Image (tube, rainbow, N blue to C red; front, side):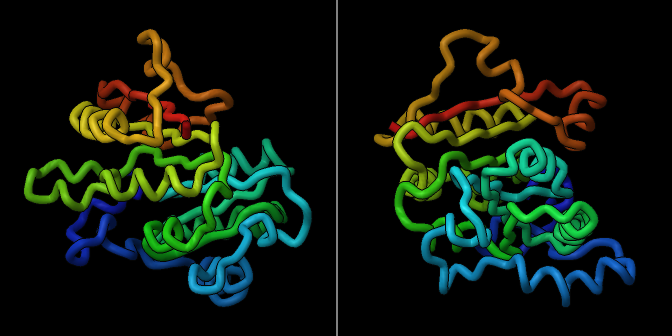
Amino acid sequence: MSGDEGRAAGPAGAFFGRRKGHKLRLGQAELFSSLLPRLRVDPATLGDPARLFGRDVDDVRMEIGFGGGEHLLARARAHPRTGFIGCEPFVNGMAKLLAAIDAEGLDNVRVWDGDASAMLDALPPRCLSTVYLLYPDPWPKRRHHKRRFVSDERLAAIARVLRPGGSFLFASDIDHYVGWTLARVLRSPDLSWTARRPDDWRQPFSGWPGTRYERKAIREERVPTYVTVVRR
């Protein structure tokens, strides 16, 4: 889960924290009964993700822990021929995304409100062009490191669903989580870190719209890092 919203203690073994924050407004609550069932992807019955959108799409991308949905929405607007699957267990973040989809009539976004690991496990091999993991909860205490989303096992799952040449894009303002991630990327037999010079991890990704977590990090004088990993 992106940002601070998941940094409460969660279920044992879960990578996310609390599921709900502020009380939903009436209109937001109504979208959970009207719009969410139409957009929710069921991992148990998932087939070809390109068929989820009711029309042809050129490729499919997934964002793990989209927070308030700012990045996912910006990408969906900019790439109407691309299908997006957004995973976010935090109810208030899902509510914000649903409200924007409803207001704008976006038809290229589908969602999963459970553990993103279940979606990764359900996806067929080589079906995604890009996986985003942006400002995930770093679980800074050593005893909580096992809750970090990035692990050897999850990187292997991401590699399995990326097509050759596809990208895993990771951003964080927490140096030791960046190091943790790179250590696992560098020992993966299926993934390659593309950086050749410092600007390759200092400069945002192409078409980067920014996120509120990034703005908070910069205000607090933490430096974001942008890691581009490619499927071999």
